[in-house]
Length: 318
Image 1 (cartoon, helix red, strand yellow):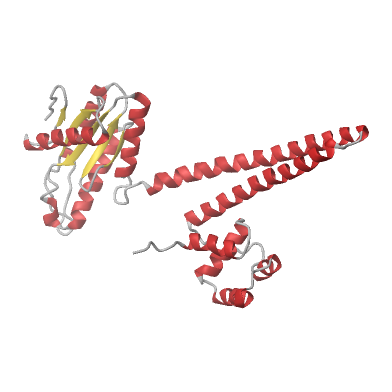
Image 2 (cartoon, rainbow, N blue to C red):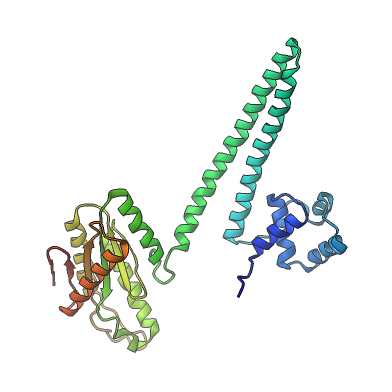
């Protein structure tokens, strides 16, 4: 089954078919037309291009005056227009510069001595103008990059707990390995999670949220995120493993002290505890070090739970 094209892809194809530049204004025009949100507008465009007639710039301006913007709040559509605007600025700055310098260079070949100075001054001024335009485009690119980083951060978050999701944690782990060569991770599980579903899926979600909050508060400044449907991961990206383990022990103690209750009758749910397994990369792949930490976490649960087990020396705290 072929992948359905997005409205953004179809908008670009529409502009290409109409021989229109990929400017933010043209993209907004195509988006508005293809979305069908304004039937009167779409019908007017259909009449304009009926019979294969290409849209003229005058028709685009007349049908959709400047200031009319079809994006009510779509983050990715706004990012698309920002990117198109940036590319347009760069293209205008560089293409115009190339044309002007090429023409001036040709004139220099046959220029009279008194004309040479004028042409050189023109080239200097034209280059300075392009430099200013490119500087503005660079500033816009930096703003766009910051926006993209923010969006990437939000997209990678787990919707239930607000913590970074699995893919984000994998990326952070791989980046840490690349930066420092070796680091440690902890895989953390809720010891009683298998029994919690007996009280309904809402209770399971509440327990995972409580565990997420406890780990985030207790283990700061270490990064905690989701690792699968029922587990969490903490990245210990400094050589001080003992401090990281102490943070995990604190999280185990704090979680065990929480008094969770059933909403339907306000009765205590019973003690909910955490167990963690800690493994160090030592040249192993992300998958292998995660599996080692998972084995230790499961061992901690089998030994009664509410404890942390680490590789090399088994450190257990009840």
